[in-house]
Length: 266
Image (cartoon, rainbow, N blue to C red):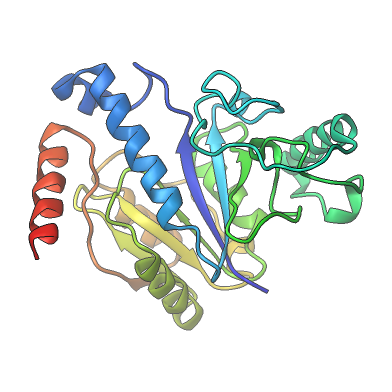
């Protein structure tokens, strides 16, 4: 079975999130930058070597819709619904919501607990990794309640049976090859962690079954201590990967654009 790559993402909205970037470039431009980074990341990371799961906040962004509009897709309009004939969409929606609610305490439902029929009647924001989809399609799930550490640990446990990694959307230099190296390193060392320049991390990868024992309760998130605290939560036993830079403010955005321009020039 394939490992799972989880992308933790926020449904984009003007004036919500990216506050430091918004102070430097304005709320509308910050929204545009975040949306571009998010969409670029999801396109790059659709890879046959893993299953791609997008865990979204707020939870209300993951809902049933029949439209590919910005309103209907709640900010995910770049990923339109799959085509196909009808099916028992209403029943699947009800069962999926129950399964997602149950996961908050007992883990994800198995595919046997879901009604049979075509998944094509649902927007991909309602699909999860227990359902069949097109090769490379991302599955969307709500992050659920709790602080960041609780939500991350829950997602990793839900998908950790065959190896799992999680990334955010703040680092535009995450590539499929970097993710694959992290997953391979985690298989050898039990875990792999990629530091970010600001003291956080851009990826956390775990070997099969390792997520069952994971607790991130003591991590000081959104601080210069996040990487060190996460490494400590792993018992200090993790392969440390290359350092990458997040785009959190205007200077980070300008630096990324300079690196991108230089790379294009060769």
